[in-house]
Amino acid sequence: MATTETLPPGTSGLPLLGETLPFMKDMFGFIHARTQRHGPVFRSHILGTPTAFISGPEVCDRWLDEKQVQREGSFPAPVQKLFGGAGVLPMLDGQVHRTRKQLVMAGFSREALASYLPGLSRTIESYLTRWAKQRELPVVPELKLLAIEGICGNVLGLGPGAELSQLVTDYGRVIRGFTGLPISVPGTRFHAALQARDRVLAALAAQVERHQAAGSAAVPDGLTRMLAARAPDGTALTPRQAALELHHVVLAGAIIFAELAALLVELHRHPEVADRLRAEVKSVSPSGEVTPAQLRQMPYLGQVVMEVKRTCPNVPVSFGKAKAPITLGGFTIPAGWNVMMAVGEHNMNRIFTEPAKFDPDRFSPARAEDRKSPHAFAPQGAGSVERGHKCAGYDYSTLFMELFTVLLMRAYRWQVPSQDLSLDGSLIPPEIRSGLRLRLEPV
Image 1 (cartoon, rainbow, N blue to C red):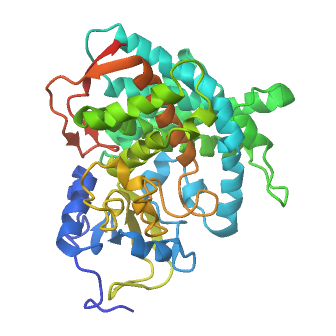
Image 2: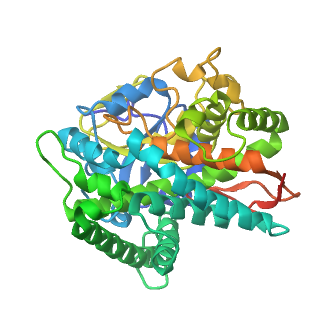
Image 3: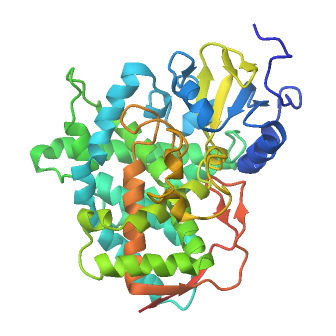
């Protein structure tokens, strides 16, 4: 067993509570302050469990080593409840994880993503058109709706209407539950989140049943593809698994709203980036349908989106649990401890030149800072999408951001009036305090 001298630096906080309260108050600020104080490996005591926080490319191989870190049993009980229980993709290990990932990825294949573009374009354009008709409006609430509506349209084949509106409302409640004290008493944020979760899972189960009943006549959306997928050994998603994975996909995908908000802010702050990006967009896709081939012909667009993903805080940690003692930087994380990969801190690592600076050219072929280490850039989990623990929707979120940017840049200009653009770190993802008021005008 490790001695106290070999443990990572840090503190355990108060008896029983540990450092849960300051962590819940501002997870991003908590991790950043302690990383600055202790370095990329430090310890704490969160939600009744001794916990090590780690970040940086040099720790990723350990994080991904299934002999050292497991996902099963690593999620705090309140978080696991909001996801609908155990057995969801981020909580699986080994071959079970790889098989499930393959089945879920059927909804995010290259062919699937290409098929989503027309419908997603219509959804985005409807929002932009409506915004332009208003003199000024806060767009963060709108971006939340757009993110969930876009995902539900592509993955569930669900268009605007009462069912979608209820899902959007309920997902707002579920997401707020991640930052409330985990006390399930009527009147608390967490209790409301659990009730909303139950309604969401019932609605998703109904969608699965409808898709199965439709058979070959089902709309070829993400759910249709997932239900039709088979692993090499013939494994398929059960209806229960499909509903839980849909829930996981929407929860994970909802963070797109924060990245879209960050994109708008950074293009406002860096007009030279906006001008260069607008010129590329108008050169390649000045009007009409946006195609996958066009998106591939806009390298600077890809660089801007990657830099937004790198700098925008979305989720504070990925969860794991030490299966065996892990030695990092001369310290030992004992077996049984929770191990949290600090996602936001990870992408501000020293491999990047001036990591706090917004600089899309760091991803240019000439500099390629993200290729200095296999794990330098990991905004949605480490490892490969197919076999590692990178989010299954990584490419989908990239597509969503690129498409939004093209449709915005080629047809509109916007102003950001003077306001408070600071982030409220008590929320996941952190939100712009002012709601990001915009004045959008056609060009």
